[in-house]
Length: 205
Image (cartoon, rainbow, N blue to C red; front, side):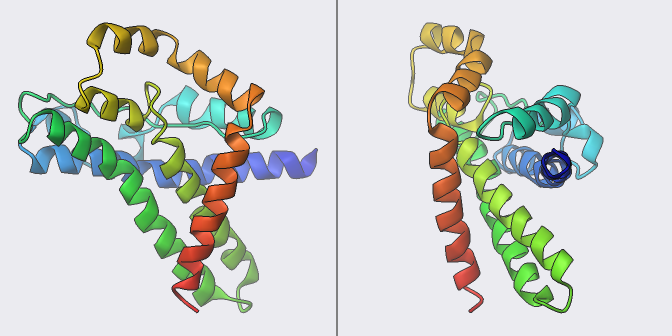
């Protein structure tokens, strides 16, 4: 059980580290596409408290790390106004994809750090390896088409019926919990995260 608590603590710490650039990427992309909403709401920053929330960034990931077969967590969603975005709903899709894309970039960077640390600083190498894997996992997890995740914004961009989207949003959290606890979704995410992470490590060998 001590090991489980240690792993959960590490997951939460890494989630917070990875969430900040993820949410900043959304805000940055929205700003580049002409929407000043994130800047007005104080999201165009790398200051951690601007992007983290108590439940989604700390409590939920800690509990799911300890009790569930997968790992669920997120930061504060970045608000955007599609009417201000260049390309409209297509711009919204670009904003949505910016977060998961940042996770892949971070995973590659952590893979490089892990290889660089090697056996000379084994503990740091292991943490960087874990960070790379978790970053890929979060990128894939956020692509799930369920509110409040980034993938749900892609539904909007694909002109998903607004009424159906609102119904989906009402039960999004419950759907995620059920999917992670009653299906092998967490296992699939872990499997493909491992394969992608191995690919990133292969870049440095």
